[in-house]
Length: 286
Ligand SMILES: Nc1ncnc2c1ncn2[C@@H]1O[C@H](COP(=O)(O)OP(=O)(O)OP(=O)(O)O)[C@@H](O)[C@H]1O
Ligand SMILES: [Mg+2]
Image (cartoon, rainbow, N blue to C red; front, side, top):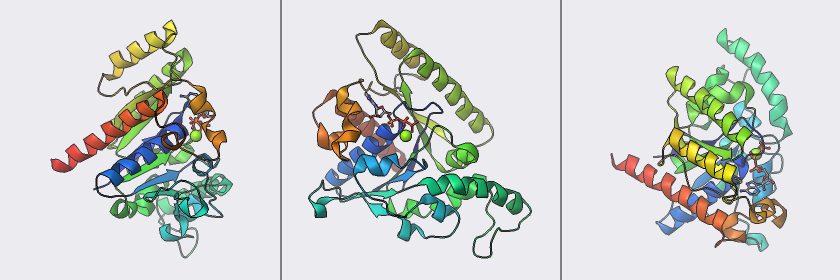
């Protein structure tokens, strides 16, 4: 049974991609150790940061082609294993990349939505699927092949926001632990709670404090207030703000598990991996 996790926060630069990539790779390593299983990162951000972080070239693959019915999942997924070219081995980690094409596709999707509500499709080969159901419709087959599906979201999902909440089982919310970051996150999670009230089945799986400088009093206060608001079980171990994470994108596409396995940020992400994994196993046993 697959678990779909969305790394979301409406604020930019809070560690969504860093969290999505390291959570995905950590889960892939864990599955390998436990006897197998696959993980896929789905990029919903046209910036293409996931492929860059993993050092892979997506070519002209793009999620938008899948969502418009112009490419199959099989054609659009790429392996993150780079052992053939002397890079790191990631035998069970995959990516469904996005590119600038997704930005353009979004405006066409709006037109589609208008048509699909009238049960008309934009072209003959693609069915009329309401925008809010797009991810469930086109990405549902991923649940057969992958144990974990991780969505890396941009700060602004625009009209795809409800589609993400409908498809994902859990929101993983990285919070930059400064005053503005924490306040913006509370607003966002309130938005998620409103979605739940509309019958959308998504839960807040984890709040991940990022950029944490534990010696700063304000950071400690913010952490305490996050724990008070969301509970100790939901707030995962704080990821310190360090040059290790900051420079990680410049290291030629290595995850923290590859570039700095014994560092404090890696240990924090490992704790998140263990929590998500344990919950998925517990859920399966029910
Ligand atoms: N704990 C951390 N300590 C230091 N730097 C970090 C940390 N987490 C992320 N960064 C750096 O901050 C920048 C933004 O991180 P990231 O890309 O993960 O954020 P994001 O929320 O995905 O941004 P966007 O909203 O643009 O998609 C990156 O350069 C990343 O390396
Ligand atoms: Mg990002």
